[in-house]
Image (cartoon, rainbow, N blue to C red; front, side):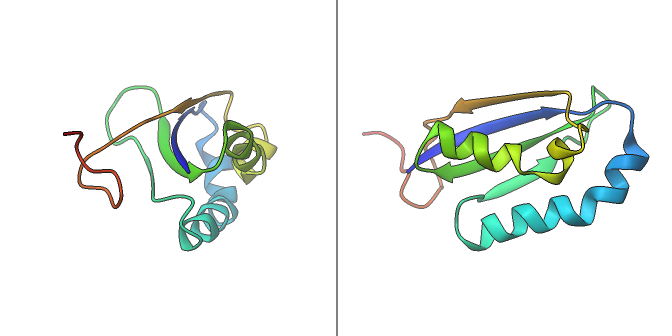
Length: 99
């Protein structure tokens, strides 16, 4: 399994996102319960609206499929997204600091 950092940049359609938020959260809640999405959250600053999603999956293809089936993405509410492999370490189960 590899970690992937997914960066979403939202546009100004906050009301449309709010209407789809329950579906969006259900999508990622199911992934969290299966261990494939350890953390997700919107940015809390005043910069461009967006979110960071961390996926713990087997491949970039799997990460892309998860993102493609997000209700926000399906509805065209995420005009920009970047998926990058993220070989993180630290206080994360199974990802200790290197020796």
